[in-house]
Image (cartoon, rainbow over all chains, first blue to last red):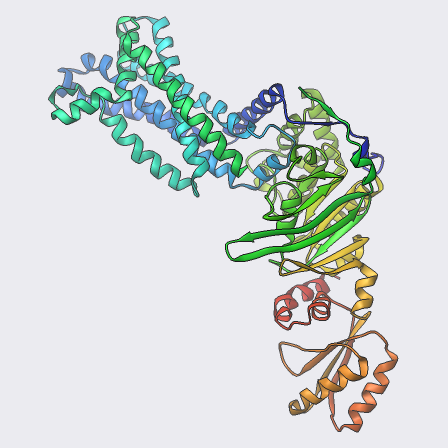
Length: 271
Length: 340
């Protein structure tokens, strides 16, 4: 160190506001950090690995016979439902981890570095897509093991997987927002679950809506989760893209359009 | 888009690394920082001395753009911390009280990520990380997760992370609190080396001895205000190089004894929290002879008399003249004495 001569401040060339390119580079580095953390603490992945396996097994064998007569007939109904439910639940973690991260000392260092302000947030959202991918792959694999053979073929199954990942990423902005404005990580978890539980269960994910009371049927029909589940079923079982596919993507875009700016603003105020 | 800012004004004030005017930060109804002024000359070590909760950390956090000041302004090498935070951040390194590194990652991974964020290429970042790890004696622990690091190792890694960009100004928030004497001495050596390289260091500490060892100038902060500023020698002279401790046999004469002490030595005195002990700065040892004679004539018998080197207690006592600080700082100063 004694050999290093520090360049005096007035001889330095300083950059003004960070450029878009720098923002992208910083975000990618932060995403890399997220991946490293997953590698270092693989127990973080318990939820995305165990939930698809346990839920798929449980729901299929509990409801299969009652709803569709037998397990084989229920698989095309339940696998898309479980897929959507699992992957969307996974997106809650984005908010929880963001809050935990922001409370740590290392966040102070990020804030004191001349990096794009948005990078820690963008990096976290980016790194979490790996979780959605794991959950998606595992759910389809479980389904396959149990005898699910999607009529749509592998191409449409992959497309369905991508659709779910994109929509979950969009929804993770909502939880990122909660993560930024909440005071503790456990409150993020609590609030998110209260929102998600009715949303995923009051949908057509597990059972047909026909037998529900009218008011519930109405809710199931407008519930965006139902549209996403239907879109996934169309893709995997029939290989078609209908109105539900479009409406899911529109819904995702709307969520991002609303929550990305307010999350970023709330985050910047705190960061 | 990366415009290069060529600013004339910094040349004029290039000799000042930090210029803070009337910084204020209020948390609820607690004025944590209450009008702090600081001037730190480039290339020097500046110590901010004060007890826990005096506002040291809050001041540093404002200067390091981590916290918005409620009032006042500050410039870092001429750049305004509010208007040009992104420029300020290119000139500073911050090492917090708590480790500002990633617990779940290894030392190497931490340094590589910070280097990448600072714009270094992949290979360059790796090399930089290795260099710093070697310099700070962390090579063997490089791959271990930080959970297994000792306090000293964590502190060193933290400092290493602040030095990646070789910033001309480094903030060190209580760099040696909680370290054992050997590690603390290593830390001091490291800080001195930084200055030889041309850096400016602003450090906070609870220990007068640390400021004494390192700092060219010192500001004493208490209750969010700067209560004294100057070189360490100035400070010591202001409180006397040593202090006089008197215990009297008969407590009922306490008040009389105090008055005599104050009159004869021409200073403020204090009664220690344990009671029965008068403490006063001793600027001129010669006057003590007169004091003792006067006490004898007044018929006040002494139980004990001792002379002590100044501790943080006396700094606060003599500067703030308030008694409430005694209990607050007694523990700390005894810790300093242990360390010495």
